[in-house]
Length: 186
Image (cartoon, rainbow, N blue to C red; front, side, top):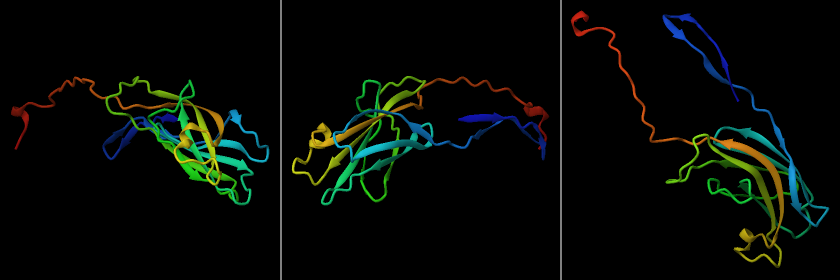
């Protein structure tokens, strides 16, 4: 969030006006919306926004369990819109799950798609979906991850406005002369 701090004064002949100052980012907890989990020993317990800008977000996910011998898990995270479908402006992020760590970090970057007309006010995400996939499962067939047939899904509420770059706007600039050529001395 930007706050404006007015700084008005003369310093070395220069005039300073209001300058934007970024406020320190606070950690923001996300609310768990749904969980398609039938195993009470394994759970995603908490998701928090660790860093956030107009075009990026860093999310830390805390979990318990996922430590059965011989099992190898990965987590794939996707940014979703209001109808809970993946937004094409964000690449899914996949990380290996380390049960000893108890947490996993995800970083998302908003990338505008060429040729798409965006609302100048930006686009809005509503949810983050985390799919935990057992890579060592007998039902793990490559390519089925996208269908979610071998994953456990958790959805957290994540309402964020992402800033878009608006191009093609015409700007008119009026130039006012400071001095005439006759008054300028060599």
